[in-house]
Image (cartoon, rainbow, N blue to C red; front, side):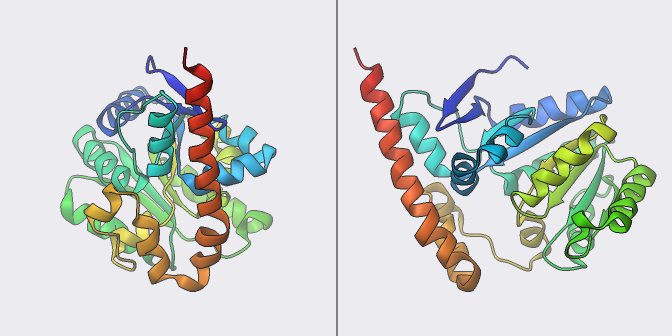
Length: 257
């Protein structure tokens, strides 16, 4: 792939828009060549900065894109602008549409509840009747440390033989799983999709477009799930975003003639 890479606060973000990313994935998948996409938001960037082992793991992905307006803002401020936000919750739709056109199959792994992936698959097939859903799988809590459950997951993937896998397990669990499995299935495209299957299934309401555009999607999420997200956003992510923007400004001033 010939698109440029911009280093933003330690993450190598691809200078690419959503349409070009979907084209690249589909063209590679049609050649039976797999890959790994990370849609990085501020929380992922924060965790990678704080944990070098996570940063090293994420760096092994084939494509890292900016899913989160703070990363877009930082890229602009430091003079390394990216064309647009490439959001995982949008990619799940656009990749599925292209898969239906090209005859590529999808596998949905994880989700917020045992039937989330199945219901999300039904929504996708209702929108794209020709879409091939290779399978769905909801692993139980702690499956990654259970040899029997991991063998069950491997069997499901082997039998389904999908072209693309959406992994809805949250960061970093999804990325750790992808990192562990991708070499065993080199023809598969993997993407961690966070809460996207729950959006798709209608279990969680996504923020309205205007909130997404101005970077306040996190506030909408926090209001819906305060018990889980208040500490993450207010104590961890907002201070990191302030640091990120200050870092971007220092980079801009340093590079100025």
